[in-house]
Length: 184
Image 1 (cartoon, rainbow, N blue to C red):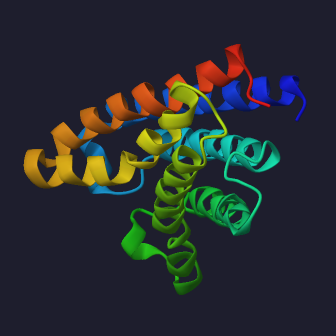
Image 2: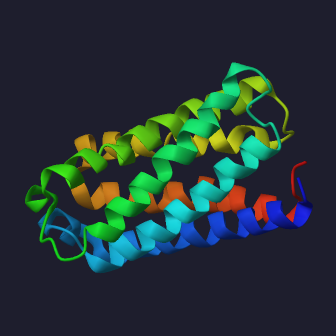
């Protein structure tokens, strides 16, 4: 894969993760009240960055050459659904107000997060990348479970800050590394 494209993917991931981390902190507990415009917009930027990362993993064979190629390919189907859900959520006060088609589309978000964890495990096990770039996708894939544990044990305020810190420490960190030193 062209190093310039990997650098761009890294930049998109770093910017998207940083934007969503900032949006999450700014919105804070208001997210419990319903759909928040800033969270939705920055969440869309995040999905674009994650899509670029997954495309890079597929293109550089970071998940391997065998059946494991299905993992990033599946994510390239789920992530546009997560993006589309965010785009179509404007005008609704909360997720409870979604019509059935949007409720179905809403499944793309948790499924994509599960897929990111599976992708992270696969990238780590395959070992095609070296150093931190081998392990950061696994840590990034743990964002959802870590944030849920923080929610359960610390409440929504703690969860907001854990989420933002995790996004910066894993997704944004990985994006910067890819932008500085592209994988092949």
